[in-house]
Image (cartoon, rainbow, N blue to C red):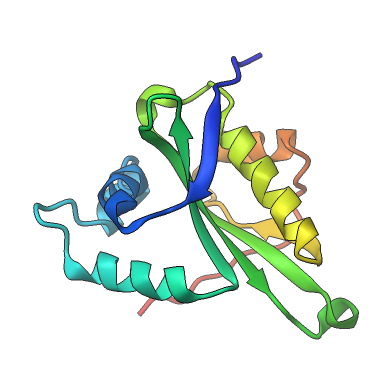
Length: 156
């Protein structure tokens, strides 16, 4: 059983973008997608502003007692006609800083997102994880998520 860390989940701020990008890049898949440069490409900040203004998207971070950002995730509320007009919550980009893993931070963030989605009227929560992320798949199954779909991607 992992130790539970004391964290605060809060809305991400512009000054968190660099830390978030580092966490997104901290695995072989993310390392191939993200650009860690000084300064960061402006595209990250432009997109952050778009996400921050959208009332259906919450980009949040987990902050430890010392005020350091140690995790992040994005929750999107997607209204739809399916299931009698039910909204669904989509959890994306769940990351925990490498030195803080196995402390319960990811679990606390995902549980926060599930409660938040339910409170916003969602009838289900879904997420995608890459087929090679076997540890992540086990983690989500332990939290009650079930394999239910086949994800497909078309990149441009």
